[in-house]
Length: 53
Image (tube, rainbow, N blue to C red; front, side, top):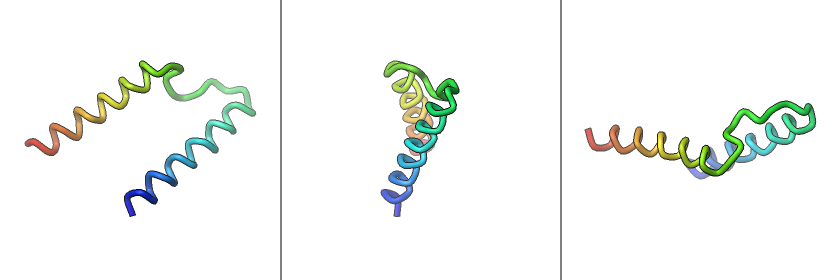
């Protein structure tokens, strides 16, 4: 079930990326890999703290 949610989220992101591109809107995400890794780091820290305490 978890993998299905991840897959649906990924597909939703692709569809929204296409829509934003077609409407010539700025993407609502960091424009480079470093920004994406920052978001991943924040999420990882959140998960670690919630699982350790």
